[in-house]
Image (cartoon, rainbow, N blue to C red; front, side, top):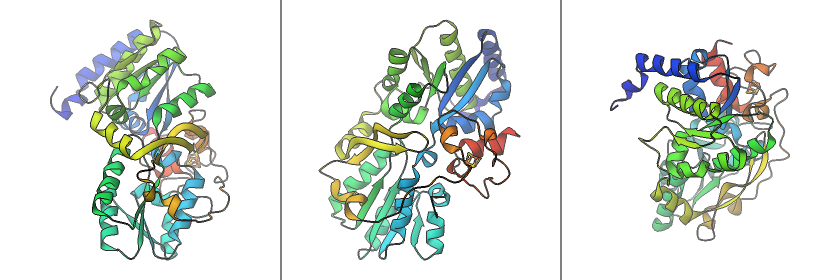
Length: 361
Ligand code: SF4
């Protein structure tokens, strides 16, 4: 197939659905790690096409959702500092922290600006040499290379007023943490297609090796997702744990060497706090000694106060696949995309927002 429309071909989709139905003989639970998969599954009505033997659970693959309140609160406190410009991506601005949000900090006079790329933040730093410009960097291994190249560029240009609050996270350690918890009782995992384009499908080999489960890396068009589920169901039914790559037009076993090289040049791996999971060893990126001067936490000393979770919100359980959004008493009543209580309803990749917008529940 050559064109994106072909990956939504209804006849091919029907053939794959039929194949999944034939293969699936017993109840199984599959987690799609990635929020983009969650949205694709809901948007294209894939859950409704699957046999009742297959239960799909959403995982922690939404960067906005997994950002811990303590980190968000720190960014909000920073936005109140004079002579600081806080820059970040759109969804982050609306996420409620413990007592405020970046949106509210802006309304209260803080200089908070939306950017589409860290390069926009670097441009703002160039244009405002008398002020400190901090980019609040969230995302997984897909966005970390762009931060790395931006910081390298800032270093080469000698821009001294640019800083990054690195909240970037690594996905395999989070999957491992969820499998270690065991509460979602998974039979298989759909690995994130974009992330795996960077880190390579070999990064998921621990799933069959250490947990005896299968993992399939899939793309995001309807046929990609169905092909992934078809492959995974086959592995589960035949009890043949394996990592399969169903996204060969983008993913290689070894990943993207250039992107991996950029991350290696700038970052070192550290522990990171995940909403709903807590601190996971080796799951975050901090600047290494060569680039530490860009670390916002090294440069600024702000006190955001103790973190608090929004009352009644069960985002943490939703992120771990331990609850569904519809288990939350606030879902669709006190909490909607226009008035979100927790991050899973704010983010375009959030599980609660996907349920609300597409499931009809
Ligand atoms: Fe949190 Fe709202 Fe989702 Fe409930 S519905 S878990 S309050 S984001």
